[in-house]
Image 1 (cartoon, rainbow, N blue to C red):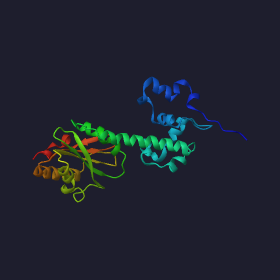
Image 2 (image 1 turned 180 degrees about the vertical axis):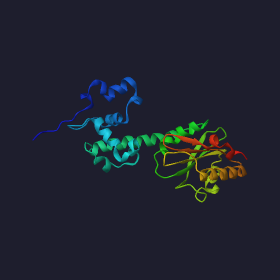
Image 3 (image 1 turned 60 degrees about the vertical axis):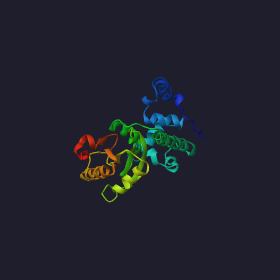
Image 4 (image 1 turned 135 degrees about the horizontal axis):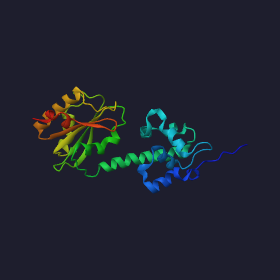
Length: 235
């Protein structure tokens, strides 16, 4: 009986070792597969850990987004990944989610649409349903909270001014920013997006709570309605 042996990252040529590369050049220089390879540490008799990382990224054509909601059972169906390695990957993905959430709890000051994109892009860009949120701001444009308003294709019935402004009133918000994603990856605003924006801007004016912008998140790209159609915000 032939015994299997593991090909560890240490056995790879020095120039291809992800750990050494990270040490010399920083983690930002590593590919997603190399980062997964470091998490896995070892491969199988005919695959390096990086090879297995590449296989993980090829699942469902989603790339890194696959790790956001995959299960241990799904990972264990991939050759070379058992319970321990599946648990390591799931744990790393969960830590990433928690770091993103924790970062939002710091009083983050909004100075531009790009600041909003940095705050929510990784959370929203991979979702397969439209999610509408609002960002509550104080008088210094610091984030008080991010509130979920609705899930599903946007229309006037599910994005009602009452549901949008009630959290802002409860938390004494000075202004708000509207926010939603386009699962297609294309953040081009629709006519309905513009209609809803105009309606909420008008409602905010009556309530004394300014609507500063409406950001649409795509796949690593965004649109600011204030920048693209400022007339929507003029009252």
